[in-house]
Image (cartoon, rainbow, N blue to C red):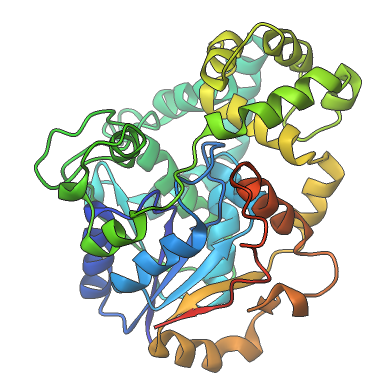
Length: 389
């Protein structure tokens, strides 16, 4: 069976996601649609607004055949590690095509861009190193380097656009993988990735939809009926729910202990702690910590490392031990799984109670952390089995 893969967060699942899923199968002519989806915490270092099981149900209702969880250690990372972790899982499943939404759609030759980078990697790294020595933040240094080396050849390639950046890192990871996929970029429609307000009648960004939901305002125009049903009466998660837990950690931990955690660099631990002593909310703390060098997303990832007490050693261990956690599947997805499960390099896990020792520990902690403010610790990776439709 031919399979098309999608990498997603579905936070929450909206009309734009449904459009991508529908077109992925149609344009790829694939029989099976595999989604690698982030769990309860996401790439920008924030909690998903609803649980991974609710988002899995929404994806299956809209045409996904197999939903695999992207482990925490990849899901909360910047674009490079996020893409690498997800692409590795799709390669292991022998996906034929990767479909993703991006601002320029088919206008950008992602395969050519990836090949160009790998052919000129030493030149890129040298220029980036010089910029970093001049105290230019890494993300800006990378963007400037690309502009200097490629502007005349690919003038519309803009790494400031988040989905172009992700698409590029998908292409880089795909280029070096064991089972490269055909890349199928699609034009995003209706709204840009970070648009804070909804202006289109049917399509709005995830950011805008989340703000509507958290304010208790209507968002029905922008989300499928299946998502609307899942949202009824459910807990909506935001960073403010976790502020008391984070505040506590920042008040009792020493700078030396904070400095040992993943993503905590350059003495930022002193700033994190000092600002916590003056802030009365997560938003207030975030605004005080944020600088040109330390973006909102970067600080939120630090905050997650502090909450979950993720050390660099633990991060490295889990990066080196990927696995497939099956969240949900259709009968077609189950058939595909049955056909390929014997050739998978990574462990296939349908229930954590039968997982190899140690490899699911971090994701178990992430689920516990996610549910802690809502006193729903019994709603976890042991009590939730594979969703079948």
